[in-house]
Amino acid sequence: MNRYFINRLIWVYFWLLITEGIFRKWLVPGLSDPFLLARDPVVILIYLLAINERLLSPTRTMVALFAICGISVIQSLFMTDAPLAVIAYGVKANFLHFPLIFVIPNVFSIRDVVKIGRWVMILSIPMGMLMIMQFLADPNDFLNRGPGGIEGAQIRGGEGRIRPPGYFSFITGAAQFLAISSSVVLFGMLRKGVYPIPLLVGSGLAIVISAAVSSSRLALGNIGLVVMMLGIAYLFNSRIPKRLVRLLLPLGIILLVATNLDIYSEGKIAFESRLTETGDLDATWGERASTWTQRVFGDFTSSFSAAEYATFFGHGLGVGTNVGAKLVSGKVSFLLAEGEWARIVLESGPLTGYAYLFLRIAIIFQLFGSATRAARKDLVLPLLLFGACFLIILTGQIGQTTTMGFAALGGGLTLAACRIPGKQEPVKRKRPLRQ
Image: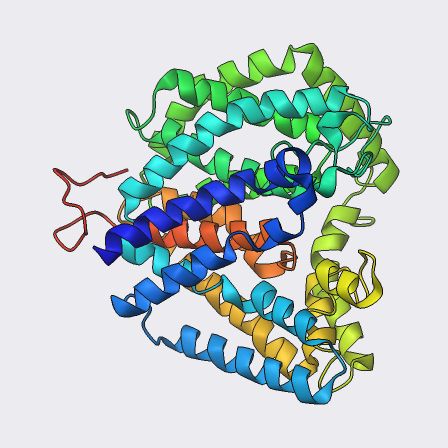
């Protein structure tokens, strides 16, 4: 029975992740800050039930996570001046949601992931329409309000447009959602009969147009990483090229329709304008890397610079997050560093900080190992989901609640997609689903 409730709570977690921005921006903007904690009671209840069902086993990863968390808290309490509330938020941001990655596959199988995918595709269509409306609207329009109902709070793109966030508080949430959506759509095109063709085409159109109007390099890069996983899958399964032929017709229709729409052209112009401003449009590997690649790889190198002047015990958990900055200084900012790796090193010190970062790398390798083993068994969905979440887990700014949510959910769904339903499942299935 507890497994059933855990299953339902994971669905609650999913819906809260999708709708959090809607509540914070439009429905109850006065409760914007409390909604940052909306998923925390859900995930804690999941853990309590999982422990009772022995679904949260003390693996090396879990032991390391709790050990690093304990050391970080002790350091922050006794070796820094960080307020208790900031430290508590730091624990939530860095540690609270990561164990969910390993709980989800204990109660979800590939069939549950397919159901999640269906809803993701259904939701991607109205979100695409919403992003178009936000793109066309004035930056101070009601549709473009930020958390707390603040006007003009969205991040600007090119040609005077904003970067439309869709359902989410900011564009990062939309970019992460589009990555998950693209992985599900590609899976549906590869695996005949899983999803209705009209839904696949509609969702595919929404994703292409949403990416065009997003002016977000993160969105475009994440979708590109998902597509790249098809090539990785070929290394582990030689039958993949035969299935890629199935992508040609639906993708051709989607691209033909999307690229002939006026809104796509407007979005492309705004996107190119932003890429010109940032230097990405003219960048080459031979001369200079784009600012997007500098941003990705610079996150690693900036941590080494941060380690040179970081104190041994750091400044305290949570101080480098936006919420921590608001609690300390009264305004949202990056008190320590904007890059995730530099933030971790400056918060916890070089020794504990890098131990935590290496743990995130270890989780990446666990996910990739499981996904490639599944690919050998003709299961492609795990690799596609891995492509959607691995950069979030590795370098994502998990101090932002939406990013942490997509990291935990994406990692958990990756592992769950490796599991074929059997007798051990809480709900019996008539036949296994193979990709």
